[in-house]
Image (cartoon, rainbow, N blue to C red; front, top):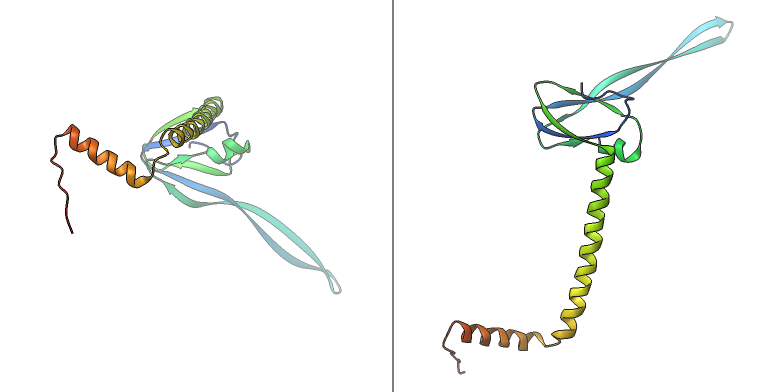
Length: 151
């Protein structure tokens, strides 16, 4: 068993090989009425927990991230049905990765905006003129003869 319902969530998992069964805990309530007197009834409520398979995880699946991000206990049981290979990272490493990726995205967005600003200032030429210049540069660079069509 990888983890069970109610376990602490401090790890993110990657399934590399094999398959895993994901079972959720369902609370089933039953109500029974028993006569206790003239037109009087006692209602007895019983609750039992049943595990129901809800998914089969296959290689490439990432699991455990929802509870890890939310800081809640595990909501399902993950159990191997055959030999498996699982990689995992702990919560601290996960948080560092997310912070690093966020920094990269912010940096890339600022670089994109900077390049767009520079490009728009340096090359304020119409599209048709730009295309003509490119074709002339290409022709000169690769010694392509200029052919002009007449109507």
